[in-house]
Image (tube, rainbow, N blue to C red):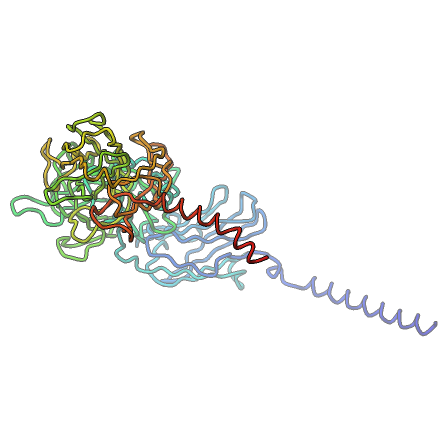
Length: 551
């Protein structure tokens, strides 16, 4: 018993001695070791002209000194966490770091905190590597933490042209709206723009975020719009190859009342949406235009344009833009449409005197655009009859020139008089489209109510959308009848915009030949519903037998 007590006392004495030693070490430790001051980023890389950002973690209310060392000079800043949240956000606007810049112009902190400059006249930060050091008690000893800053040459940037349906400019007012439009496939990249469609230019331009941040405004969009409207920037669409007898034509994207902008400076990405026919225009050389004019000036069919963007010394597509390889170049076309199926040798579209008769073709209007197909001047009760449908993103055969995307409408012609002809008109936004290269009112395609096709129709009545301006989202796959048993209309879901702010789904039809029928017309509905019904009945009859086999 006495031995156990002695062992316990020895262990207790050792524990007390260790505790006393640890207390002594804590008392003599340097204050900086427990300062809790740190730079959250190890290294930041930005293009020269952008904004470099560092987040400092500091004890609540404490002041620190930051030294930016490089390019043959030191810049000393005194920062105070006046907001008391334990963090200081330091921003370095490298766009403002010219030879004569002062540190107070270049550096800034978040709202509520304080910054004072210990050394003026050291704002120059050319491309290169820098050391960012933070000190808690003067700068004589070792810093509490360090980080690296690398400034690179910005390069020339890149541009991408996209297209959206007519009248959708103001809907593309945020990054989320642009992302939704791309996901729903009514904002699509292209190098051809039909007059009247919404033109969208995406700019990937490093080195201008500092210029955007230097503008006044509550949002990135407001600051970017202010930059475009000011004297230090210019965003033009310039004619690539003007005629020999006139100067180059320019369209200006700098005017806030004709453009919608979206800015993402953190990713060096900017969007500008516009109706090309509403932009101010003028003539001049390079970036200089003496006078801007508003109003219709007559965009020329087939004209090539190239975007030109200048911010300070930054240039997009500098030099002679008539040279090849220019980023963001595009061509303007008159709106076009071609009725393509089914076609006979005499140039008419044969349809059966039956419901669900399809008129389809190609157009260069943006996916999601509306086209209105009208059948008129025919004999019988249905004429005139009109359907408005959406254009879907489906590429045409290689031999279809200048027509890019698919449209299809269905008509009930069961009351049409067999053997009669009728006119087919395709219009969009009040403009008649096609035949190709023909713009005179009254010209168009012809249709024929073929009595022979009536004997080949298998009629399946289903509800169809006759609302005109809405998408046929209530159609069920394989439920339509056909004028010819040689092709099956297979619906595939495609999303396109509606009148509301959210696009609605519509159905695009692709052709798949029926192996059990003789081929005649090339693009009509088939026996999809009947085949599906037979398959379901057969499956129902086989199910009991399979269960018996398993048992």
